[in-house]
Image (cartoon, rainbow, N blue to C red):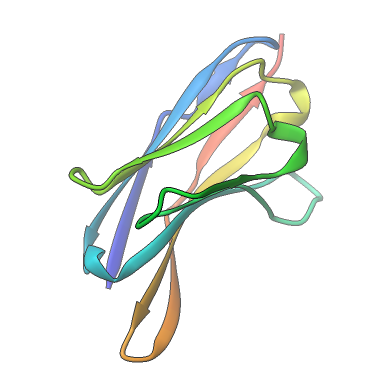
Length: 120
């Protein structure tokens, strides 16, 4: 089992910045990828950014490229999402996801989510 706790959401004006953090505990050695997803009201959940824990390889959703940066600190079992130049369209609940592999099976674990609101 992996437990995820997120922090850092809130209200910010357009053009502002926020940093989200997610700390993992439990069977962290089984995690091979960490990611941030978001879901806005009336929309499907979408992948925002992901990072592989071994190589540090990253990928981003097109609309956040150049504005968001995902990073991980394996010593602290933490993944962060630095969000710059925020737009109202970034308003959503952001959730941390840990993809793990154990006993021949892949399992996704999710945090509780944190609200990000971009508004003037």
